[in-house]
Image (cartoon, rainbow, N blue to C red):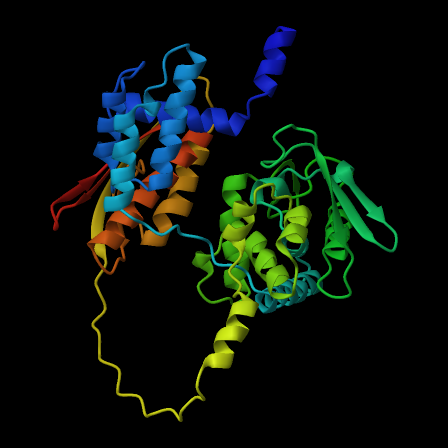
Length: 424
């Protein structure tokens, strides 16, 4: 590889390249478009998927198409007035509220950490070294992710050799690059040592128990207590956290994701008087809009002013009996899924299939209909048609994302035979 090409490749994030490649492939292969494209083609492409794909997904597809045209020296069709008008019309006719992961509250953090500590102790007493190691790793993962507000990809990219214990203060973590570090200059994060639920003590206990000298901080532990040489995959982090929360007894564990740790800390900091500037500096946000998206706290000043003007609360009246509402039966959907490699030598097809089953299909009570794992029956719970369409759109997006991350093409079709509906 020439020196120039080496640096050009390093300037582009691998995740971004894969995501953009998947988006342009969707335009060409799934929809049947042609590159270079015209503004009219792009507008028709948007209209074809309006209401089926989330608005942010469509904007991402436009960014990918724009990048392809810039890279190949063609005029950017996504800037055409017809494209902008169609996108605005989609936003008007198909409004949707952004779905966010539930934040992990401080009391829930304590419940999870104390359960992990007890579970690690019990595993040690019964002679289960693999279980003890997993619980120690999970405790460090949850505490470090919460108190530092790390993203999931940042947690799995932490390296043991980049950690430094500072006596009396805590620990520092160096990340060579992250999503907010567009210049790749790297950043050192300070982690406070706490009297309770301490991320520094938890991380140190995991490193010592696993005898980690260098390499990835968070790794898989097999049934024989063997420690993997590679880090946990970012796609597996959601499944790991939901398993932890489920075992710790949290209600609705499937509502959480890796963002729950970051959102939980942001909400706690906001409720405890941190100003937005301090929070942005601590977490690493460069844009105030990014910070505000994570804050669910109430404006305390506005609340005090409004409360002061309200009349006294009258004694409560007896509540009428709640009407009995019959539960809405789930919609039976049959799914056909085919995965193929980008290139004959590409690896990851088996892993992509496993992740699609575990992350996308199992939450919908998936049943295999064939031995190869290409046909499934799903039971998708949705209160109405709009919710069903949104659930299916998110399901398809997640399956395509997993396939792209593992260098695979995905052909997927969902059919609701009873309702006469079809999605792909």
